[in-house]
Length: 150
Image (cartoon, rainbow, N blue to C red; front, side, top):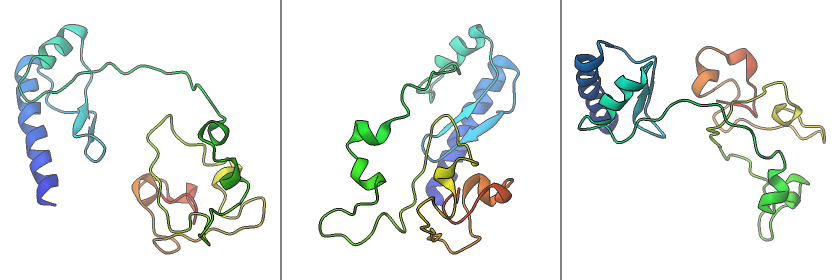
């Protein structure tokens, strides 16, 4: 937690500098784990000024991206895993593995995220049933289950 505190302090220092040049004193969202950053509403001119500040590595405009594929098992060569085949020398299909997804979001109603799959397999939450991370631990626990935990 000392490192997280350090990162938070760095963000606050940069946010203070941003407030001096833009008048904006708060971020609409703060990021910490995948990237130490923040989300701000800025004009293009303000963004250019922020980009020039010491301590700022990059400034990127939010933009909508088109999903380029929905066939990742085929593209990654993982069709066997999706078919339920274990790798040679293993007896598990990924039980206990926690995966973080940083992408376009998640459709919690999709059958891929059901606690019990179409094949009848019931997933076990590696944190214990009812224990969640991220949005599941906060605002949206009703959308989560023993497979979708965060």
